[in-house]
Image 1 (cartoon, rainbow, N blue to C red):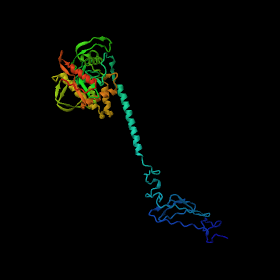
Image 2: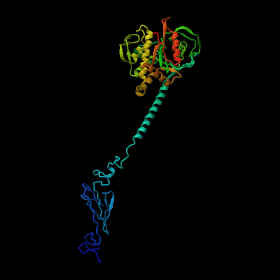
Image 3: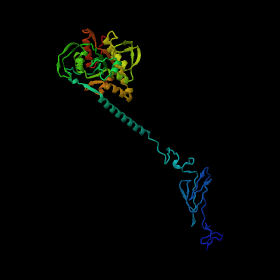
Image 4: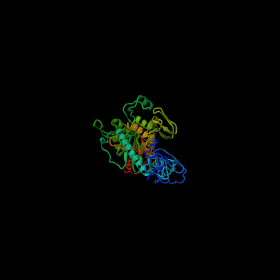
Amino acid sequence: MNDWPEDGGYGRGSANPQPEGPRRMSHVRRPPVPQQPPRHDQGYHQGQGQGYDQGQGRGYDQGQGRGYDQGQGYNPDFTQAQGTGYDSGYSSGQVYGGPQGGGHGGVPPQYAPGPGGGQPGGPGRAAPDWRKRIKIGSIVVVVGVLVWGVGTYAWASSRMRNEVDLSKVVERPAEGDCTTYLIVGSDSREGMTAEEKKKLHTGSAEGKRTDSMMILAACSSGNTMISLPRDSWVTIPNFVGSESGKAFPARGGSKLNAAYALDGPELLVRTVEFNTGLRIDHYAEIGFAGFANIVDALGGVELNIEKGFKDKKSGADFQAGTQTLNGEQALAFVRTRYAFAESDLQRTKNQQKFLSALANQAATPGTILNPFALYPTLGAGLDTLIVDKDMSLYDLGKMFFAMKGINSGDGKSMNMPIAGSAPQNSLKWDMPKVKQLVEQIKNDEKVTVESNR
C-alpha cells in the first residue's frame, strides 16, 4: 500500500526539478506542546538556528535541530519524525533564567546573588570566619611587635658605651638589698663644634670634670635620689690607677669632684663608696652635648619653674611658670649656680627636678612604643652616655623608671645631709645622718632621714 499522498507534493524520486520538501505522514503525530502557565516575562527558544518565543512559551521548530527547555533548567525536548528530523524548542519562562534559577530580573542563575552572597562566576561563597581572621591578625601583630622589640633592643645595646670597669674598684662595701646607681653629669665637650660650645655656653676647657653627681637607690620600699654636692669635703682613699695600674696613697681633705679629675669614674666610685659605706652597682655618665640632644629629641621637657632667674655664665634667663625647655635651655637650667645664694645646693635641687621630669617624659608609652620618638632619643643619648661594663639596656631602663617614680611622688629626692662649711668653701657632711640614711637603703627600708638644706 502506498502511503504517500497524492496532493501534488514533491516526493522522493520525483522527476520534478523542485527540491523535495517535508511530507505529511498519516501515522505520525507530533505530540502537542505542553501549555505553560501565563508568565510575565519572556522565553527564549533555540534550535539549531535562532528563534524567540514570547508570551506563553511558544517555540521555534527547526527541522534538523535539537531544542532546550530551560524553564526548569536544561531539558532537551525531542520530537522525531521518521526521516524528517527533530522538533526543537528552547523554552524559558524568563530571559536568561527560569523558576529553578530563582529569576532575578533576567540574570543567569550562576550570576544571581543567592543567600550566601554569590559572586560572579560561581555559587555564593560562605560568610567569612571573622574569629579566625582576628586570631591570625593578632598573631601577626604580636610577632611583628616582638621582632621590632628584639631588633630595637639589639640595636640600642650595640650603641651603649660600656667603658667603666667597676671590677678595678678595690675594698668595696657589701651589697645591699637595693640597686644603686651613681649618675654623673660631666662637662665633657666631646664631639662639640666651636659653634655648639658657644651656643650652649660651655666654654672650651679641655678634658672633663664632674658637673653633678647623684646616687639613685631603686628599692622596693621606695626610690631615693640623693644629690652629692661637688664641693663636698671628703677623703679620697688609696687607689690603683685605672690606666697605669699604679697604687696611690689616700688624700685626706679634698673636694669630691677632685676624685674624678685624678683618675676618672673608677676612683669617683671608690671615693663615694669609701665615704658613704654604700656599694654602687651601676655607673652612668653623660656630657653636655648628649644631655642637650636627648632633650631636643624628646621635643623639649615641660617644667614648672617656681622662681625666675638669670645667669650670664650659663646663659639662663627664665621666667616663673610652667614652660617647655629645649636642649640649650635645659643645660642652662641644670648648670646655673651663681644666681643662687647657696650655689651648689640649689643647683643640685634643680638638677634633681629636671632629671625626674626628663625621665617622666622619656619613660612613657608615647616615647617607648613610637619608633619615630624612641630611635632619635636613644640615638641622641647612647652615643654620649658612658656606663659600666655590666650595665645592660634593661638596667638603664630600670634606672629611668626609678627616676620617673620619684617625679610622680613614689619616692624621695634630697641632698646629702650637710653639717656645715669646710675649708676651701666646701661642704661637710652630717655623718650620723649619712650613716642612718645608708643603713635604711642597704636594708631596703623606707627612708626617713631628712636633709638639712
